[in-house]
Length: 377
Image (cartoon, rainbow, N blue to C red):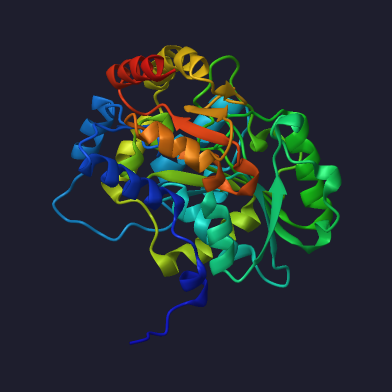
């Protein structure tokens, strides 16, 4: 029996991280105790003051959340942007709260794809940039990221600027952990303003750093063609809450406010009220950075002793490691020892020869993983 399914859907390969779930289930069925470094889903405790704010926000009567979000949430996000990046934004006109960042990233191509139907996506990169563009009927232009360029795209190699609807970047980068200087954002934002496309900056990992705080695309001198996506998922260990935002110039934000009521994507009001508390506190973010710093220090020497070579990872909770041979075969070999990691090829052909390790297991699990690595190296 056949059904009238989307050809984009039927033509897609399995979502990479669904494959990791299958691998984990397969290993568990064999009796292995798997330590999961594959998916970047933090397992740290959500701070109690955020959970308390969530509970306090539950009212007797529940209403549909409005796509524009609660004014106190927009204000809290605007204040955080000013505090963190020294940029003043109009919270009511330039900020759109979202149901995390994934859905906003996926659907953004539906807002910007019109006469222009080409969307540039980084490779290796988060698969949702490409998948969202494909469902919007856009053409994909992969933009390779290489170690030789610090995992930044080579903007001089791009010749079709006038065909682009959007150009996706992600710094601190998933999967490589690289950071981008403000000069890079300035150059790309200048290209966007000159040629009329949108610079889409996924900054989900902006608060997970080890040395200097990363800059934001919001800090460029001309933000007219810039849209920044951020989330509380990693910053505040709130992946299950699904709370983020888009900050963009008023015309882009207005387009989102016109689009989003049709798809009903806004956090529940009690989640929004908890999010206000999260955005207005920095002390718990300092604590979470220290948690990941300790995990990194625990695991990295053992990984390098096992023959993996750090190839990025200036920030985020990811370790991007060069390996010998096929990344999938290497990941499969590690799984035989109970360690689940993501093959670099899952992030596109340019990720071959690398594996990504997400430092999301507990500190105790990281210590056990280090012991396993020393035993097999």
